[in-house]
Length: 225
Image 1 (cartoon, helix red, strand yellow):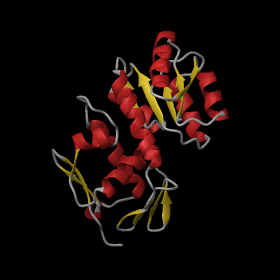
Image 2 (image 1 turned 45 degrees about the vertical axis):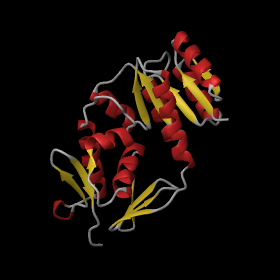
Image 3 (image 1 turned 30 degrees about the horizontal axis):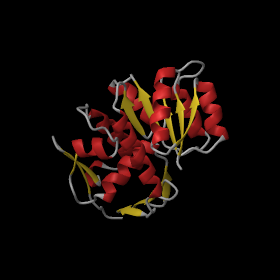
Image 4 (image 1 turned 180 degrees about the horizontal axis):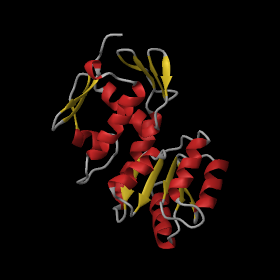
C-alpha cells in the first residue's frame, strides 16, 4: 500500500482527498501547516507528497526546497491555485515533480499520482548522448566524465529527450509527458529549462546535441566525443 502525505491547510480539501485516496487503497497522513509537513516528511517514508503552496508557518515552496536539500527524493506534487509561468518554474526548480492547479478533478490527480508511482517502479538504465551519460539509478549526469548537477525537472527533461533520441519531441508532448500537464498551458516554460540544461552542460552552439526545431520542439542527436 502506497503512503501519501497531504500537506494542506484547508480542512475540506484535505478531508476530501483523504477519503478519496483511502478508497483507492492508499495510506494517507495529513499535515495542516508547512512546519508539520516538513517534520513528517523528514521523519517518515512516503511514496508521494501532495503539497499546497500557501500554508501557515512555512510556505510549500520552502518545504519542498528544504526536503530536496536533505536528499529526500520522494515525488512531490504541488496542489495549488498559483499557476503563473514564473510560479510554476519556481516550484519545479525547488524540486517538485509535478504541478496541478486548483480546482482540479480527483481523477486527474489520481492519474498524476499513478504516473509518479510507475516512474519509481521502472527499471533504471543508463542513457547516452555522445559524451553525455545519464545514470537513471542515481540521478546523475556526466559530460565527458565530469559530473553536471541538474535539478530534478532538468534531469527529467534531459532524460526524456535522450530516451527519444533521433525523434522530434514536440512542445505539447514534452509538457504532457515530462510535466504531466494535460490542459492548455504556456509551453514557454520548456525553453527556460532547455537553456539552463545547455548552459550547465556547456554545449557549444556549433555542436549542440539538443537542437531547437523552430515552432515545433526539440530533438536530441549524438555528437562526436
